[in-house]
Image (tube, rainbow, N blue to C red; front, side):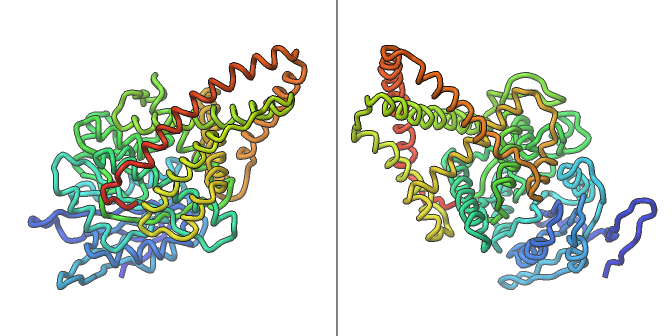
Length: 472
């Protein structure tokens, strides 16, 4: 067994690494790296799932960083050689556990540390988050798919959010995230399985592609901290040097969801901010915005769709309130069509989930839960764009960590701003002459009709498209 060593002046423990078997000449070799930050609740399940794979990784490195819980001591129990037999094939692996202590580069630093341990001896890099549980066939499917075409630089697993056993708020938020991830994954699957983001949750990457990214971009490491979304940036770089980035048709993994409003806000604002930073033209730090990059087309589509959601919903609420205030509202039945189409689209997404539950179906069919979750996403969207345009120099990684610990009230800001705006508009409306009020309604409603019609047609197209047998 591996022994612990106290490293002088470092303030952390590390299980000493030993080299495993040399690269095999008759099959590809896969090194798995697990960056872990305060993962004491999940790291045991993550490692157990990896060690029960139908195709074991050839080596597993757990890289613990900035952690103040029991993650290291739980992971240390797995250190050493392991063997697993599946269908008369015996696979061997070895687990190494590293605690690199305080790491200012956070997940990026942990990934690069893991890369430095394996880059010279293995063909493929399998990144797995410290809260991601792999289906037992995941590594087998990922290996087959990346070996099927030398043009593929990376393949992401289909990931979903694991169901939670905590309270009603946590269950509601995880169900919303499951629907959100399902829609994103299905969009990627139906676009020729071209994956916009090789997610850090579970992706296999060509070691040659990573090294070529370093050369082409003059980087000392594959992952850099220029972006809030290091996996999106790396995916863009892999695509830019001629490799394909794909989503697996079969490999699956479940990830831990955000179970509080604060935590969800921290995660989603960081993701949105990072995506905007990559999309927007111009040079920021060492990374240029790449608005026309193929991997960002889905991002643009998501942002335009969210803008339409804001315009139609806020427009309807304000025009409805204004019409009622002067007794000018007339109900038309066709206003029921957009929410019915939205329910149809959400129901199709729920049916596409491979492990769907009754909660997933109810979330879609009851309309209100999905609508409320969309309003949460609108808040995240607005906060991210406001942060970007204000050019705030904030550490969104640290902000997410604080939110997950239950600190901060930034998630309330969109609601407070909306209340202030509505109050101002109400005051202005009540002080307008009657003729001006009628003119505003005569112009506003037709604009809303047209905008809602366009949005409804796009939703209907997505709701009726063939899923071609894919499950997410």
